Image (cartoon, rainbow, N blue to C red; front, top):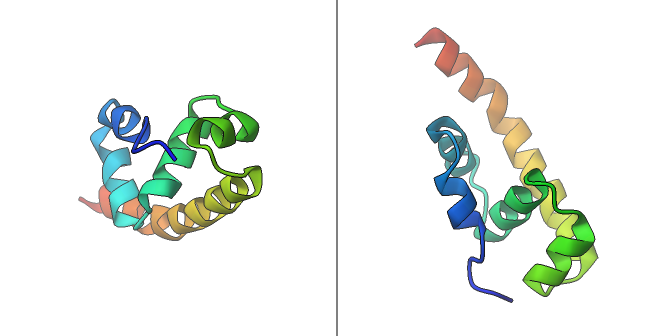
Length: 83
């Protein structure tokens, strides 16, 4: 597996709120990598090849990362709207 290949670089360019949401949601580095790559147009096969992991692993990380984000998105949005 390549060490933190792109997620850190991709997150640097994200809006501060999005980076904070990823942190607050408790995403692992691996979930962040997969979500950042797929969010930038990579398909699961490309992500798996780049990270040198199985496509099923990519799918699991996408699923768990999306669940974590979904759990935190409503509260994060509500907090932002009320501040």
